[in-house]
Image (cartoon, rainbow, N blue to C red; front, top):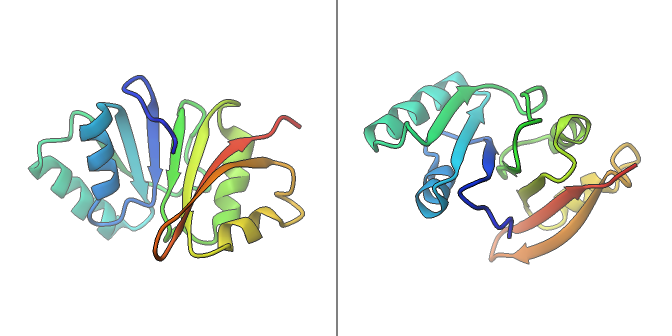
Length: 146
């Protein structure tokens, strides 16, 4: 959905202990990827796993929070389904991301859309596409010019 290419700088927010999404994307696109998790345990396990898989040269892992991580240099930002409450992350992204960056986030049913309808986020993002999976939805968002 996000049409990631090898030229994109990609951020994954909420990689967890087994960063399969970043690994698959890196292998498929050869894009440079930074993935973060605010759990020090998840960070340590994910970093060790990436090192064992020999992907440390294209996947960087940081112990950090999506509500204050520097995002201005990323072209594509993925938000994991377990990142919640997502509204504080989206507020941070809106204030700091590139104008033309793309956000791909997963949610259960319409939870992401419900968050986007909140007054403080209303009109800040456009939902460019929605993909329904058996148990989740994926939303491709872009920043509106206000």
